[in-house]
Length: 422
Image (cartoon, helix red, strand yellow):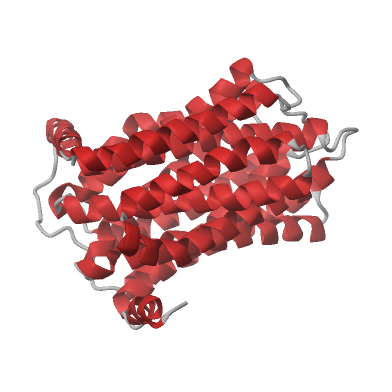
């Protein structure tokens, strides 16, 4: 890494406001990883529970769609409430919700009550991520936003992956099964509690919003939502960047369900969920490594060739990697594909986040990020539903792999063409 690339990172690492906001994000991401490890062990990788495409898609829908119906309102409040207080209280709420999840697990339930408490936990987590993104321009200068958007989400992805791996290790070392899941959930609750303490080291008004507003009525909230949507729709660069990220998340929904089916039902048959979980962890680690690579490459390459060209190039990489890696039905090819798709996905996210932060005014930034997040949730669920409708239960469908690659490729061609219309 050259001197020009190191300098912006070193400047950020001397920025105490950024470091404290980053610490908030990373602590929460570690808790997210622990939570996901517990849920995966309890629902998807239990010997008593055999996943089907429809069951996995329904799980995605239960966890993501209800939040998507109310999520846009969160952005309006992020533009009204002190964002520091949002980060504190939301993380503490997550801690309480995880403890409720633990009680549900102790009862052995995997029905609606589990879905509801997990919905609250993950929904509040989305709220936190939107708040962190909206707060970032308050602690980082505009010229360093690309580097900050490369470092913060990527570090969060890495810590999330570490949380998953340590959660799996903790669960196995404490007896495995539902007992191990309970220990992991307790650890996640403690971590979320810590994540709520970190923002208290920041100034009360340091994270914005810039303008204090009176208490909002439901009509005010609806009007604010409409305003945020109009602001996003009116800016073609922001709208196009969000569209690319939504394609990535749709593909992520497809890939996640397909990977689960391949590992559980094709590559590790005979009721060996522990080996399937271990393989899934390796692929997840490869995706995390790809995100790290994106953080290292994206700031310098976007300065050299532009955000649109770099994002389009990584989409082409994903268009090749997805069908080739899936079609071989080998763990090592899945890991290589995960690395390249992680690179493409994180590069697009860095570009989209930076575009929004540069082009959307602060009074609308919170609601725009929340709208963005709602779109992400819907796209993931749609991807999962596509697999539930058309994919075989063993996950192995060569035509489907090729079609997924075509989606990436067509998006790359379209997005590169948009630079001529801006």
